[in-house]
Structures are given as structure tokens and as C-alpha cells.
Length: 226
Ligand SMILES: *Cc1c(COP(=O)(O)O)cnc(C)c1O
Image (cartoon, rainbow, N blue to C red; front, side):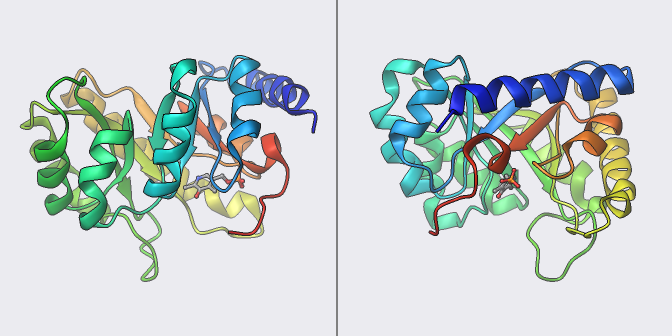
């Protein structure tokens, strides 16, 4: 698998999209869920630093096996409260914080010897009943709770819009999430991350101001079945 080649192409596409949109180049988060450790190691050897995982236990094994690469690990899947303890030990970032209970648990379990855990508030921007994430109106209250926890560092917001086949129809969700991010950044100086855009909609997300795209398929190819 020409993973290093995929990485170069993806970074180039990100660069082009940012240039086109006259925006700063967003960070690439390589989404490695269900990918075997050697594939992740190959991308790490090619220079990729930030990786996203959806399942806490699966990630714990990769984090352990790849510790020598000093990678940045982001949780981008839904987090059940009973997995908060392991998540707080394993990850550098949790991008799916959407309720008060999770904030308390992550703060409680973040090991004292680690840097504060970076967190993003996941917003259910399209108000989908089936989806995780908080309603947009709850962002300020959750942000205040996070900011009050010394073991957590509030870094921004994350969204997964409804996957309309017509990509253009995802624009309002990106734009609304950007507005929430701008409001937070105006209030909290450490807020610098707007996580939005995946393989099929990253150009649009970058045009709407994403600072981090989460890319799986375009880097690794189609995912093995879980
Ligand atoms: C799987 C996943 C991605 C990556 O999706 P691709 O379409 O493979 O790029 C991004 N974000 C989240 C939250 C995911 O679960």
C-alpha cells in the first residue's frame, strides 16, 4: 500500500484547498480506526504525527505499541462514561465531549503526571436524533465547565454534519460550527481548534474555516470491516 504517497497527496490537497480559500493550512488528523498497527507505523515513519481513533480499547493497544514514535492520539468516537478512565490515560485529545458527566470523569482520571487533556466539544449541529454531540445552545455552559477543570484544556469544537450526498448541503452546518468556534475563541485564548471535514468534504470544510481535517479513507484506502 503506497501510504507515504497517499499522505503526500492528501497534504497537497489540504494545502491547495487552504490556498484557494485564503485560509491557514489546517492540521491533518489521520483517522486510523480499524487499521492495523503496521499501517499506522508506516504513516508515522513518513512524518504523520496526529492520529484519530474511535474505540478506546483498540487505541490503547496501538498507543502502547507505537509509543516510540511520540504520536498525538485523538479520540474521535463516542465516549461512554465507563470508558472515561481509560480514555483519560490513553489519549492526548478527546474530541467528543458532549455532556457534563464526561467532563467530570475525564478531569478526575487524567493522570497527574500527564499534561492536561485537550478537549473539544462535539456539537450535534444538524440536530439529528440519532447522533451524539450537544445541542449548539449548550456549548457555552459546557465550555465553562471544561475551563474550570485544571486537568483539562478546552481547545475548541468538533462536528460531523449530516452526510448529505450533495456535499454543498453540508455547508450550513460547517458555517454554524465556525460561528460557535469564533465565539468560544473570543472568550478563551487557548481555543484554537475547529475539527471538521472528512475525506469527501474536506475542501468545503477548509473553505468554511476548519483548522483540523479528519481523514481516513483518502489515506489508508477503504477500511477493513470492524
Ligand atoms: C471515520 C471517521 C472519520 C474519517 O472518515 P473518512 O471518510 O474515512 O475520511 C472522520 N471523523 C470521524 C468522527 C470518523 O468516525
